[in-house]
Image (cartoon, rainbow, N blue to C red):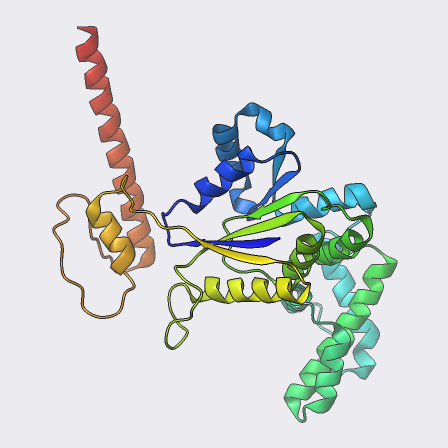
Length: 334
């Protein structure tokens, strides 16, 4: 079972996911972006209590790979550190330099090698093998084709060297997907995803296998509907494209799909803030509303200045609120 949980910002998608997850049985897994894992763990304990950790866990994609390796093996395999990757890339360029056209004179500069590693990471995240680059280079005439062919040869040699020396950390999700097919780690589990806007092809392959193995998968995305706006450049367009991609993956695997829309009246929020959320990126002229002191507008010459002003304003409000509570406590004591 694959389910999409859709709604605009502030409708309560995260709280809905946490409540439903805590009300379910054992084998609950909540996938979130790496930078949100700690905050989500605290929110999960706040909703489900300390005992919820016996039935559910919060994972990022990197920690998910570790869980799979723990069951299927591979957690102790040696991986390259940044310095090792740099040296191995230089050796790869040297080994294939006689075959290269554009990059025929290998450079020892770290900047050049770092850019090659960044290109390799991007291609691996997009599941583009070196052989495809070589083929594209042979099909495309001119300097562009030569660059593609050279990149394909370099990355193919780099991949061969990593197989002999140590594993490339960028391949972790690819190896996790391969082992997931064998070990069936997700069988009997319920998978929840929150906080994502889109996924890399590497991550999509992992999700494809998870949605087949798991009892259910629920993905929360921030968008108001699945139908694309005219021109396909709306504020929710990335989330809509992600939703359609996941639905297509589920349908190809024969997984039953369901879409749920969350709607709320935002009763806990002040009216001007609700109005701003709905109309900030809306098309056409909107009628002005009286916001009083609820919303402040500030414009600076640079983005850094705006951030500094915002941080200073937050600090001022926090201190002001703290002094107000102190005065209340003093009066209550008297």
